[in-house]
Image (tube, rainbow, N blue to C red):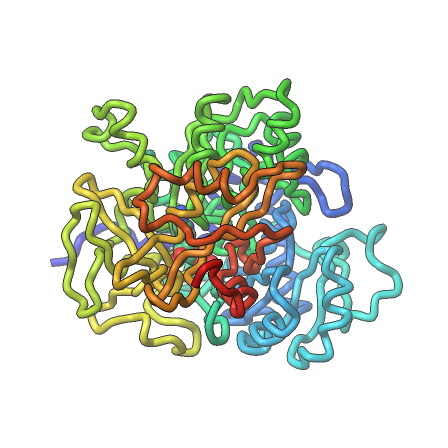
Length: 545
Ligand code: AMP
């Protein structure tokens, strides 16, 4: 017997329709690429998204299944392009400007992108790259006629605002199935070529609902939300969907992501919730440390993930500014949110020193994320908070394969996706990432968590960034080398760091050496590139080995 409820396909543009209808006057405030602050509303964005859809279909030949790329910052234009293109049943392929030319060329050709929407900042990049992109029909430059570069050599350059002016704001969205693809994002691929993750309308809507839940980001129409996390990586952690779904005001930082610029918008637009990787909050932390008179009167929650969030960040914002820092974890393949460290009734009843170590973990799986840890043979491991194993996940917003069927070994016969992360799960259900499986340091048959070493080292005065890697050792197979970037002007030395770490971790976890560098290499998604670091220290010799 089937239920007798209505068929209401879960399509992402219905989210924007809802925002326009019931939160039509709610603002989207952006720092524009051209410079000034720009203000619009959900109602206007909806009309412009429809206008774009109509003209993209008519003039650019975009239809169901067409792949259209964007390389753009978080602004209102990027938002309306997402909805306009997705609403046609076409696919938005977000391009990360931090990728190398070779990677961009590979993914654009692999995806078969037909048009690329670019912010002014990236026109020069594509003028150079376009000869390697023979299938791209042309480029839409996301600006108005006054700012359109007159002498661009881009193939078929189209001015976005001129294009939009020819569109129909009353365009009716076409009908299609909720399982239709709407987004494409390539993983950073530390080994081998990047692999494409294809999101559907249904997966994005369900994921946005999940992210909105009180034990995840708790987004409401009373919030002003600033996604510092870029729309070009992993759906801006769903905020481009979950904010309009809940009628929250959006504050888009555009191209300026430094501490001072982020602070300025947080306060001038009275932001209550923001999301980004730890590096962004480290920059804000430094800005606040050097300007002790500054305050964060409206900010209530920071959702931090992408890399392990160091304790110093959680403490700094919590103790000085009363901001609740929520540690989360996720992956491009998971749309991306997979867990959040918000208290349950049981952990809320713990004393501060009982709760604190749990709050630092990556957190619990919300509804629609199924999670387990297994040994190498695939047997489930206990939730005792000590045993660590391969972290595997399932869910309606988790990939079931990669684009063009690559990387099949990550998915098992029962549909579990192997995240490549190593984790523990404690009796309260809080998951803790100890490492990427490739980055675990294997010393004398035992595992050392590189993330743990980094998190502790960064708490030492004068340390700006820390990275731990395992290097070959004649006796122990591998031992940890700690690589440090000092804060400007700091004199911190090896002895200071070793003294600070002593007693905070097991003695045999202490790094065998500490080296200082000017800069630690990062991947395009802002994570420490352990691959590049291991390469850089390939010929390193231990002090007394
Ligand atoms: P990406 O798909 O580029 O977002 O990268 C996903 C990977 O980032 C995960 O598999 C983890 O290795 C890492 N990651 C994400 N969030 C966290 C976190 N809170 N703590 C530690 N690692 C994280």
